[in-house]
Length: 95
Image 1 (cartoon, rainbow, N blue to C red):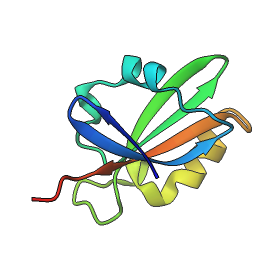
Image 2 (cartoon, helix red, strand yellow):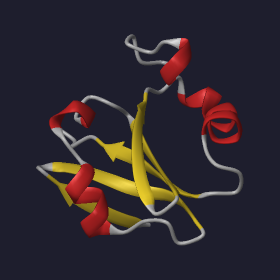
Image 3 (cartoon, rainbow, N blue to C red):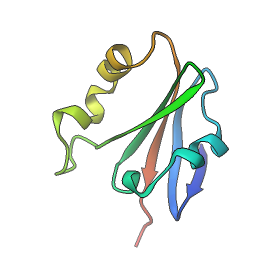
Image 4 (tube, rainbow, N blue to C red):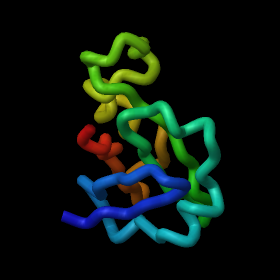
C-alpha cells in the first residue's frame, strides 16, 4: 500500500496503470478543488496530466458525472485509448 500526502490530505494509490503516477507532477496540478473528493483520477495523454475527482456512491454529494462506480465508463469514453492513468483514494484520519 503506497500512501502519499499533499496539503495535509492523505491518499492511497489504488491503481497505477502503466506507471502513470508522478508525485511531483501530481502536486503541481493538485488544488483545493480536490480536497472534498473521495477519489482522484489522473490520466495522461499527449504528455499532459489531467485530474478528475470522484465521489464514493454512498457520498451524499455524488452525481452521475462523478460517481466512482462509473469510473470504467469515464476511462473508456473520456480518456485517450489505453492511456496511462492512476487512481488515488482519500484516506480519512481516524478521530
